[in-house]
Structure formats: structure tokens, C-alpha cells
Length: 261
Image (cartoon, rainbow, N blue to C red; front, top):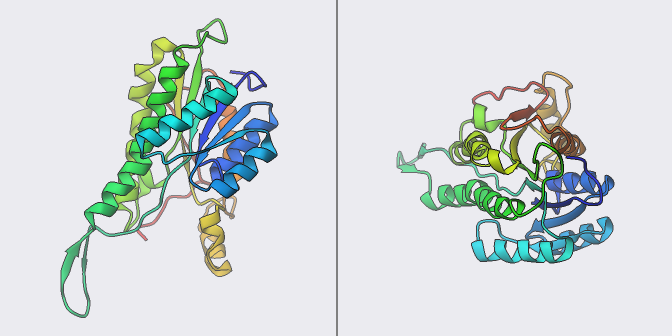
């Protein structure tokens, strides 16, 4: 699918980090971008800069999501591209033993449920809403292509570390949805792919001390640096324009394999 001014795109988590880089990359190629995010101030400013539209959306809330898609489609028409970048990172071991008291406890169920609701449930909801809309569109080429969905998993889907049980579970499930959903949509001309980012210079990473950033960068085999969000955005564009790429999960990680901790 060629990216140009006829293409409308929805990017969740679009106000910062990987989502912002994706919005910038698509807009630079002429696409009309709609940013779904909870950060209203940043989202409005970026949408104005890119000539797009901002929609304040909680991807784990169905009503919020439906309002966001309605606003985006009123501004740009039915999207042909959906990129799911919205997500949260949570930390917590399945169980822990207090070294002083000896008390044993388990991970808070609410934290696990929230992680799944946002990272997995939000991705699923957005895919479902976008796919229904894409199915109403005319194909853009002789092969019947109507749309492209790109989800964001993580290297944690394969290399979950200590304390990442909720996060890794959510991202492994996101990765696992690509093939069955691609098969669900194969007769509708909608492709589904996944990106698994490694350690990227996102706003959360930028908040770490410089020494911590340098240590993480040194752990990457090659190149020995943190990933740049614009590299994620470039891969999104490549996937959109590569019509034979379907049901694939691509690690974008400098060959890193995460250790236990």
C-alpha cells in the first residue's frame, strides 16, 4: 500500500515515543494522521504541527475508543492504517518474600489485570474497530488490499525478565494475535503484523540517569546504542508499503537477548 495523501492512519499512544515517531513518519509521506492518547496537551500540539487530529482516548475503555474513532473518521475518513503503540510498563514478581519479616505475598491482581487490559485488551479493541471500518473500503490494488494493522509487542514477549510476568504475558499475547487475526482477515485484504522493539530512547528511558542509559546501550550487541524512535517509524512505513509482509513479528533490537535481570 502506497503511503500518500489518500491514506488516513490512526496511531494509538501517538503523542510521544514510538507513537509520535510513527505519526511523524507517516505524515512526512503525506498520510492524514489521528493521534489517540491520554496526554491532551502534548497530543493537541503534535497534531497541530502535523496537520492531524488529536483524540483523547483510553484504549482500555470501549466508549472512549469508539468516540476516538468517530472523531478521527469525521476528520479524515475511514483509516486504512492502524498502528497500536499505546501501552504501559509494569514491574512485579509473581511472588516475593520480605527479607526482614519473612512474609510471603503475590503480585497484586489489579496490576496484572490493568496491564492486560491496556496492552492486550486495548490492542484487541483497536484492531476490531479498525478492521470493521476497513472492510467497508474499496481495495487499493488488484490483489484486494484494503488496510494494514501494525501492533507493538516487545522483546519481552520472548525474553521476559524477572519482574515482567504481567508485561511479558501481555506482549506475548499481542505477538500471538498476529497470525490468527491475519487469517481471520485474509479474505478482506487486511494485513496484520507486529513489531517487537528492544531498548529504545523513549520518554521513560530518557528519565533514567545517564549511567543507566549507557549501561543499557552497552548491553546491545550491535549497534551499541539505544534504539531511535524514528527507526521504529521507518519500519512501520516499510511494513505498510510491503504488501507481501503479513502475519509476521519483527524484532527491532540490535540483536539483544534479554538476560534474567
